[in-house]
Image 1 (cartoon, rainbow, N blue to C red):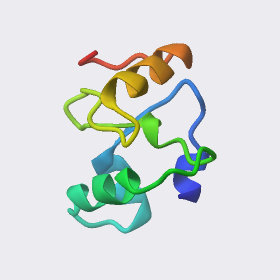
Image 2: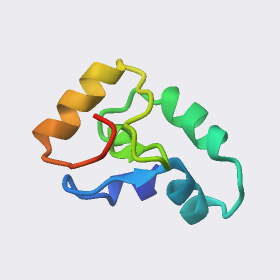
Image 3: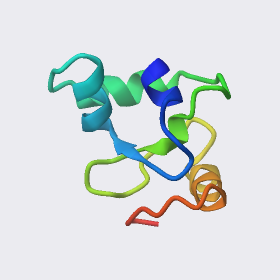
Image 4: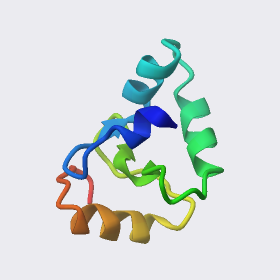
Length: 79
């Protein structure tokens, strides 16, 4: 989770990029599953997007994820 806390409001990473930093494996879905269970607001899970650029899921709803990213002025394809 410290990796996510290091992201600035203007940048996103995809699940694969986060995983490569954390454990260097091909378990992309594991990252999504872990983040889906996180409800700690200090961990910016909304800043992790799919590798195809779409926003992906969010445990508080995809619309809220999009709104937060827009508020943070993060550009991502797939909105």
